[in-house]
Image (cartoon, rainbow, N blue to C red):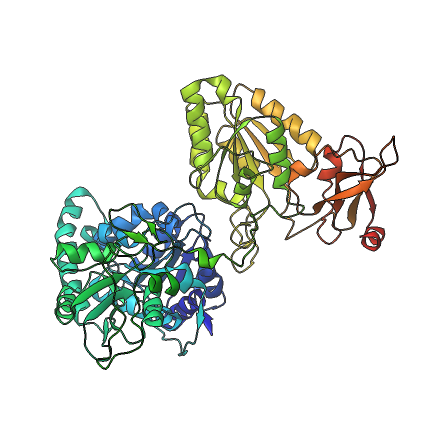
Length: 629
């Protein structure tokens, strides 16, 4: 039993991959974590996805098989080399795994990276289970070497994380291909690139023929009359097969280039044709452009994940089988089977309700962990009423109530650039009331260049680097600032202070974000400076290291006035309860909302005691707190 990510790692091992690189990002992170378990493969966390792909490109040019993995927005970062690699081609095989995130479980958008394959003219494979996830790595590498091209392998969150049975094989030791200097192939000066473009188009014609005849494409005829046909790929195939077990299906493993001849033949043998795909009508639009009558997004949502239930709701199910072996019939989009269905943006489109998913699940908003060092920073920023441009990481939760101290979150590295842009648009007064926050891993990923820009273009932005010594959001992966590689081998750690000085920043403070007084004073000085300033808020992630594990705090009810200051921290370790108390005058009882500290969740950071103006929260011995709790 392997998840899709584990299976891809196994596929890289079995297919003779020598070099693998990635930047962690859910849902792709576990691919490299599992590849690192195989000593035969050199594996690395690269500073960002662009660097990872360029490492893979260099390995492939040198004659080795290489794999590069990233989440869907990571391919945006790697798009520059990705597009040009389609021109240069490869030597050893190169597969690029893009893990898309329909439904945005952990992402800022749900872009459909199938469009990258078409835009870059790169062939694309889409596995539908873990067995195919493993097997398609080898197929992709073989195709890469046969057709001299990088190959995009697209998975989605459900394929990445779902587990299914996988048959394993031994590793194939693929010898290094000879490297021969070829300036016209690998040096993309305009003159050479013009010669490579026609070769790229010719290659795609050849791949189109391969797609028509490949075993990657499978026709599964249903029982009885073939009056309905479904075309699908990836996890959508599993949903269709579960919803309509007797349906006729053209299951595509290679979705770019699409097999036109095979699709036209399949379409000619069914009365009604439907494309089932998540997100964009990628296949449907191409079929319509070919003149094939097909439906898809007229009855299925264009946003979020699909599921067997959503697909099932989109069709009217005939009552019982007939003697013709009919499969369920779709109804025209103008006659929805469920009058409660929501209407999509397109005219006459039907979007099924998905309330069934959540009826039995209580709401639980995401929250920073108890003892998280970021909490002190966001509390201080909120109290100082500063404009805060944010970035990508678990600290983005600082935007939510009750901290409510982040104004923007666009993409990795954008916090610094956006703060600089706001200053240049509205003047230095705005700049001195604006702070950019960015994590240590994100800063090394894509924050160095914008900080350089602030200094170079005479800005005065304040940047707070939230240095918790890890890439926490994706599961505590190392990065160039931690001093360890993916295999936990000791290595040089980037000196953030020296790096910022080298970029030209003179005002630098290193502060503990759990010391609120010093933190507030540092922020005040930094924002008053008429030049770029950096605060490095350094404290390890509490899930990795907790220097206060022997400390515990308790509320003293007699001193608490229910002012709510501690509640503004949003700490899960603080539980607020209505308690009956005797008022100062009279004999009747009254109720007040009083905090209680859960000893099982308290990490001893002491922030609650620091924000309390009435000394109603005090440190106690942990043993005593456990007994009273």
